[in-house]
Length: 422
Image (cartoon, rainbow, N blue to C red; front, side, top):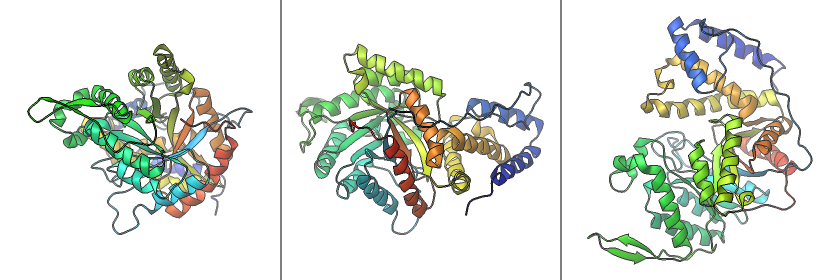
């Protein structure tokens, strides 16, 4: 049943006022600073006297698909709860993969995540990719991402060559440098010593993996330090491994990805739109300078997605799961002495309310296909080629699968006649 028009907004405002009323002036100041840091507009009720109260900016008008607009769509998995007990933990992933394979999605992404509840289902993308390879026929199977400094590059080449054979030549990987120091407990050698140079190690590993994939030999040190030339087996089916580079918004990483001729995997939540547009332009310019076709580079943007027949019903269905997802994600940053770590529960609730509103209104594919079309048009304008739709952030599996039907409708509005594929 749909929520009556206006009810959700009134409830949101009332809950916000109650939470703000519990904050002291000093807490309000900390919260306001934290909201600014995370690019979230402070509510009108939050006024510490340090800023002038101006008019509320009206919501941006919704946009419809323009003739000629194209966008590719894939499914993205990131958040499956690893603490869940009992069987069936991977049924949603497998069911979505089968659905996407039948309905013309370009790819399906599985991540590498360690030591957190949200995402704990995904410690090794190549293992899950092998399972996906044998239950699908057409869709590209991708690591989104594999944290290269945590692995020997030969092992990455070997494992994904196996999946390439199992899938009939349908794999791709996005390389990540890693961000949380705890993950480097898994790194070969002294992980904490390697953490500061993780980005350089990632690019070095990409080069080694590409050479091994092409059938070249590489020199590696034996136990006594002497060099040994090795090649990886089995031989893959694809002559070249499709490679993306993952980044949250570092211009340097956009540029370096362009210089090596890789594709680009990013997100829309951590960057201002203008910054993302500038980064994409810098990426394509770097490709051109290095002799790569700038238009051949694929920019994929991860967005949360739950497409539903009614906007207000969608809002209520995703509110709890998405807020929980955002809280879990921000809590991971406590070890970095972030602003979020300095907030108490009431302050965190206010921040999460604002973050949820921002995501629902303008940063995610949440609601009807007509509402979601507006964000796709924004992504087209920014230079994004593909929307990677994160669907496993806590909505009930049966509703996720139903929502995929309307996501397919949205996808088909943007079908490219050329059928672009990296």
